Image 1: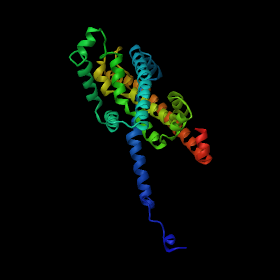
Image 2 (image 1 turned 45 degrees about the vertical axis):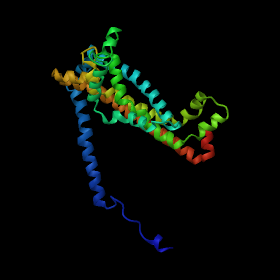
Image 3 (image 1 turned 120 degrees about the vertical axis):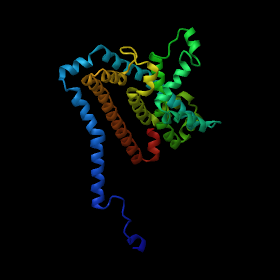
Image 4 (image 1 turned 90 degrees about the horizontal axis):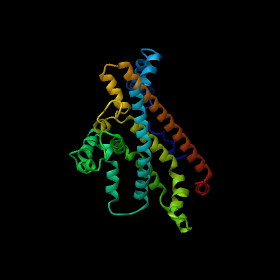
Length: 296
């Protein structure tokens, strides 16, 4: 045995028992006070007046409209952003063209811009005094303070999610499989659906889950472009604020509990997708490179 091999490995951070216990205690306390406690308060306050009052709040017409508008926004915005994310990731990873880095930067801009700023920017683009405002008014097309504006604002803040999940994966996979399929006579669409899509589907679904969660919970940009009109253009997060400002605390928490349940469902979906994707990667690694390529 060599001298190097006989030497003990350097200690890792947290190997000392006291450090390990202190670190775990800090994480548990921080998680309890920052995450668990607010969630518990939401459900306690939501049912503070009883189940009947909770049911009345959830089934109240304005609340139902806010829920339906939120779901409708997600049903429109998420598929559009998924298509945009796949197309952007394909263009960036499969083609070489001037401005590729600029396109990557543009895709990531919503991560660094405040949603409020994005909402105000839409006012200056589609508002009556905005860039396209007079033209839209002449054509009797209403963007702001209506569903289209809410969808556009939601799409802006969630535009990077699918693309940023796909770009690193597609860069790591390279272009070999697509080029091989093309050399065998496969069309572009057949190559995409038969080769590319099976390899990226779990990352794409993961991005879709994150995108959906952000769309349903978006407040800042939507509050600017929607006008926050009760029963017409207020989504569920905006409706929670309206109820709270009306001193309907239990009602506000009841509506917030619906958002919380949606968030929990999103997290469960995310975990299941991660587990499914990890299991698939494990099976492919055990099968070997040749079998992995055949499976894909």
